[in-house]
Amino acid sequence: MDLTPSEDSIVSPAKKMPAATISGCDDPPDFQLLLSCPSGLSASQVNSVFDPSYDRIPHPNSTLEDSVLEIWETRLQKSPSLYNGLKFRYGGYSVISEDELHQKTGVCLHLGLTDYRTFVGTNLNPLWEKFLVPSVDDKERCQHTSNPLGNGAIVKTSDEQIVLLQRSHNVGEFPNHFVFPGGHPEPQEVGIASHQAYDGQTHQTVNEKVSQEMFDSIIREVVEEIGVPATELSEPVFIGISQRVVNVRPTAFFFIKCNLGSDEIHQLYKTAQDGYESTQLFTMPVDLVATATRKMPGCHQGGFALYKLMLETIAP
Image (tube, rainbow, N blue to C red; front, top):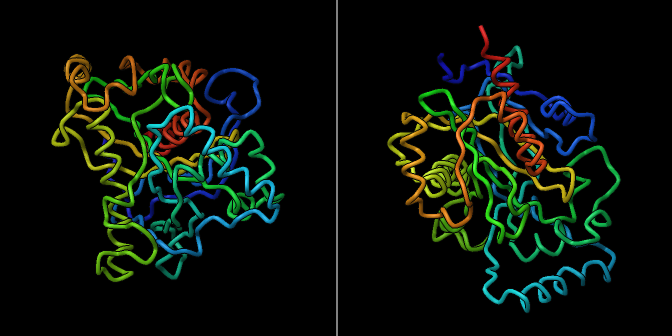
């Protein structure tokens, strides 16, 4: 089945899908789909604008804002090895419409800069809901939270299985849960240390490199987490952005085909660079993945929902 994105790839507006639609239960939804691209978008159809206007706005309540640093310092005392790395902040998106019929042919991601300390102090703050602004617009609602953009991949093997990982018990979030391979796009990979430090690059060049990093990073994460060589992976196809309801954490999801079968992937996983982040790799058919979503973080439940929408769109 050809999954090459077409020029009239569908970009759907944000919508919320109940968890019951993927797990067969009637629980409240654990995720929100901020952006759905069920026909899939290639790297040439996804642009990024990196700009300080998409950075987090400090909360006007000084006590709440002061808690950001206080929580980080408390965490740092317990875990001195914590690293305050830079991350891209998700600040929304715009639809690119290129013809007179307003056909949607791509999207532009709006990205600012944040860091792990601010993520811990806002999104992971026990009072995280107090950082939210009452609004139906996600950008306005989350203007005071860090919202680093994560990434995840639905990897399909040559024998039609989907790759899942079970997280280690000592990771910071959702220990022992099932997840799809993924992590984060990294500002440092494209020479970004701040909005002012571009290593002599123009703003346009930076935006182009950030756009490419969205796709390069998910290949990098898959290679590091499951041990499969990049040469055995197809070009990633962007299928949308899911947001976890708890802590409002956003994750961009991609679909990737792997040329290897399940048995070969299981062997390669044994020597994966970041294998310590997980305890076990699973390959399973789609119907079993639906069952496994019951023990997934909400954003990964949303990633599977995006994949199901893609399957419905490409079905003959």
